[in-house]
Image (cartoon, rainbow, N blue to C red; front, side, top):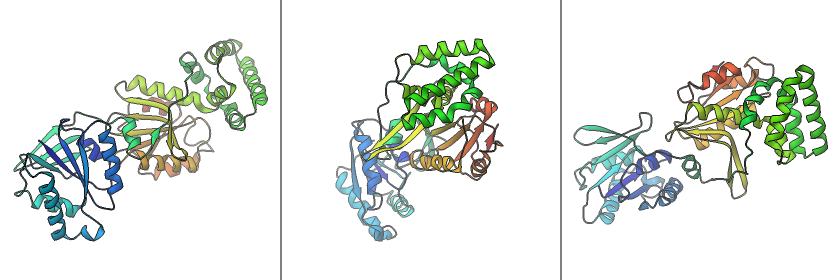
Length: 372
């Protein structure tokens, strides 16, 4: 195969995933409309980062989209001018409009193609070849988290140097209920920048632990001091304000899905600043799952935010998880959980039981469902 023509529609991820399945020396031509030119530009830019030969051709404006005669003339002209030697080529009909695909299929006897058409099945993760018969191939190349983000015209902002909290991780989870009592204050003080008050509240927290179980408080203090000895107070406060749960969930996912790419505290930047932030992002190379971790109350705004993030970055196959350390029936969770049950992109995993279920069902959970 020398040339692959990709019909470009509204979905960028399937086109990019399809293109990277071919050998590196194949030339790719993205056929778009004026409406989808930006989508094609982002796919072209990301393919170019891999040193893949790629260019873009447009069929024109909306008036061409349903004009089969003009579409036939334009697509035929694109093929004739970009492949004058009639080298082996094929059409990827994964994207584009239905008229574009119909015209391409109607021209099958005109193109000098060996295996004339292909279609990427994102659900079954197969490339379907359409000739006189149908055949399939398993996808061998995958997407990175960075691909998902860049195809949305954004970048992952470099993480700050992270503190090693591995020794504190299980201790924090064991003391979850105690941290939750003070967590909202820690988060507020970190945002406010009130250093003196933070240390006052932290002393209250340690005193609370000591009153309940002196040995437990001693273990906590030793582990916390070891992890945060040379770290700013704001980093400490953000950890106690919710970062501890994000760290714990990222660790749980890594332990149970070692072949996946997993990142926590992912800041997404654009020209005017930080656009979004993911608590935990997980991809198996085909789908992106975004986890929002909540140790405190969950609001409808949290659900709306996660739905928006998933619709922007995850593509048609992506889903999101709202992980709440509190049960779904908790007073502050009721309205948000009602919204979860109505969602087509999200599910909720609640309480410690929910975390145990997450370990086995990160990619095969049902949206609109609460697991606990």
